[in-house]
Image 1 (cartoon, one colour):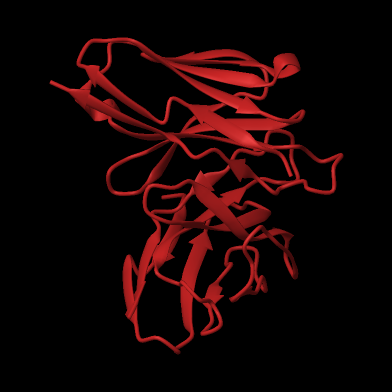
Image 2 (cartoon, each protein chain N blue to C red; image 1 turned 30 degrees about the vertical axis):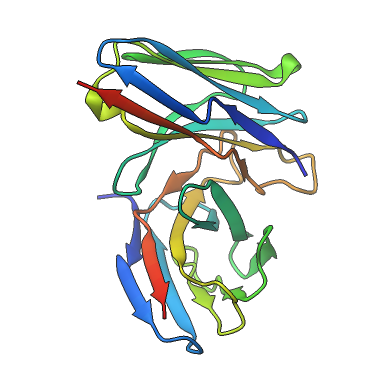
Length: 114
Length: 113
């Protein structure tokens, strides 16, 4: 099955702890993205990567970090510096270097920090 | 950055009704997609439509790039059409914001039996 997997589906953490969200794709896509969604709102871009070993900040990168060591994987770390980390996090990928670059989304991870 | 506005914010439909959702954007775009977010949060691709018209079953979409808007039509709505509909745009490879997709705030659709 080709697709994007995110794990875990639900994640609970104590305030002050860093937490890493996993995103893996087997679509052979070059580009990967992380979004944050708050209740009743749209998606906001955190980080994106068009190619391995390179990534750019999105609109709300503060308090987050990423790495792109492999084409298939784009993990997101929510650091203790992120003031309001509780949210729904969505990962996406696209064939960013080709003609039509549609984004496809994973099922998301709901993070709750107390 | 590019601004994306969707209207209406909320829509309540009786099963069988037709509706039109609108997406306006503030600059030229090279990529426009429509998504449906189901009640479990999954975003489902509906259309990749930077210009022109496409149809897929009861859904169709039209983008008029020169006038900077796109429309999503739902015909003969069903309860399974409930959810949030988002449009997302990207300005394209010739810009320094390539890949920096901007989403609208969405239209919440409720279809009642």
